[in-house]
Structures are given as structure tokens and as C-alpha cells.
Image 1: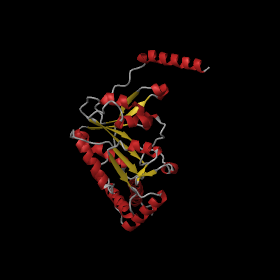
Image 2 (image 1 turned 120 degrees about the horizontal axis):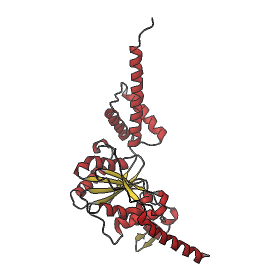
Image 3 (image 1 turned 135 degrees about the horizontal axis):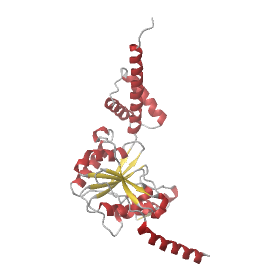
Image 4 (image 1 turned 180 degrees about the vertical axis):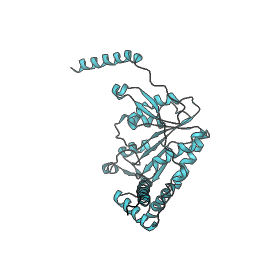
Length: 306
């Protein structure tokens, strides 16, 4: 039975290879865009063709708006400027607490340096097996590309995990000079870590040698040249970011103490003091006050029935 199944699968593969040239050509890449999202035709399964879908409205974040992460911002900004100048630059892993500005930092880099030739390609972790195809598309182009992988987290058996390892450092093919990989993750080593793996560590001549399980997990994150860690904000940092966004939104408050109290309650309900939480509160506060102000204006302008 197994021999018959293998023969059938072999014939199917041969048939697909013959049909593939007759399939519709992939969508031509619109190189006038500054950012793309890698798309895949899921209906065709793993053999589905991918294409770069232009993102027409990228986020317009500014680096100076990202407060509380000054050291991380300076480091990734320096690395990106070196990349744009054609000098040595490293792939970057941004890891740590949720909502602390990891993804926003990468989006702000695009907004800051797109006029200098920086471009961004967003790739889902399930599509990382298409990295060779993406690299072929951008090879030889004059723009400088950051391949952006957001919220990465793997199991060791996933194909995307192995593809990313090879693309970072492990393939016979040298990576193109016009490509860097910037990835964000809530996990330091991108993989789940278990207590039993740490118990495999052993001491040899006074030195700690990790077990094979830990070494395997470290092997992926170790291929990123720069590691940036992000942490929850202190209360003072959180309130400073709240005030910044309220000022950006033009939401002045007649009672700053009450605004701070509401902002702290908002963070307590969310269980997080972060830049994301501060931005969400500022938007909500500005929206509520705009509605109240509009209602008050309408009430005062309404004709009296007396």
C-alpha cells in the first residue's frame, strides 16, 4: 500500500510540474510603492505563488514620537543609517514586553528614511519559506530593503524557522547587500523554553555548557547581530507618553490631575503601562472630550423656547 501511495504522489508531483508553467503569471511588483506585504495564494497550498502587494497607506509614525525607548531607538537608527550608507549593518531582533514600541520603531524608520531609498517588506512567519523568492525579486535593485517579521514565535519543527535560520546565516548563498531582516518577538529566543532543558546544563572545568535543547533555541536568535530588549514603562514614563500623545492630538485638559488619574486607571484595567496603552488612552480621552465639547456647543447655540 505504501509503495502504491508513493508512486501516486510521485505522479502528482510530476503532473504539477508540467501544469505550473500554464498557471497565471504572478502579479508584477509595483516598485513605485515604499512598502509591501508578501501575499500567498493559499488555494494552491505550499506550491502557491507569492507576490508583493503594495501598502498604499503606511503608518506615518515619527521617531521623535517614540518616547521611553531612547537607547533602543538610537541603536536601531544608527544601524539603519549605516545600512543606507552602504556600510556594515546587522539584522536586528527586537524582543520584550508587548506594546513597548518594537513594531512602531520599524514603521517610524520607514517614514523617516523612505526618501533615502529605504523600503519595507512585511512577511508573515508562515511565508518565510518564500524568502529565496523574495530575495530573487529584490536582487540588483538600488533600493535598500528591510524584511519585517512581526511577532515571531516558532516551534522548532516549523519550516519557517529553518528558512529564517538559513536566510540569516547558514545558507551557501550569500545574502544580498541591499537586504536586512528586522524581527519583533515577545520571546527572547523566538522559541518556547522549558525547565527540563535548563536541567541538561553541565559544568566542565568551571564553565557552564548548555544542553542541546537550549543550544538549538539560542542558535536562531544568535544569528541576529543586534539584540534590543524592551521593558514595561515606569509610572512616570507612562504618564509622560500620555501627555505627549494628548498634546499631539490637541486634547488639552482643564484638570491635569484628573487626566493622570484616568490614565492610570486605564493602564490598570489593561494590565500594562506601555506606549501602546498610552496612545489608546489618549485617543479615547481626546475623542470623549471632543464629543462633550461638541454637545456643549450645540446646547449653547440652541434657540430658547422661553
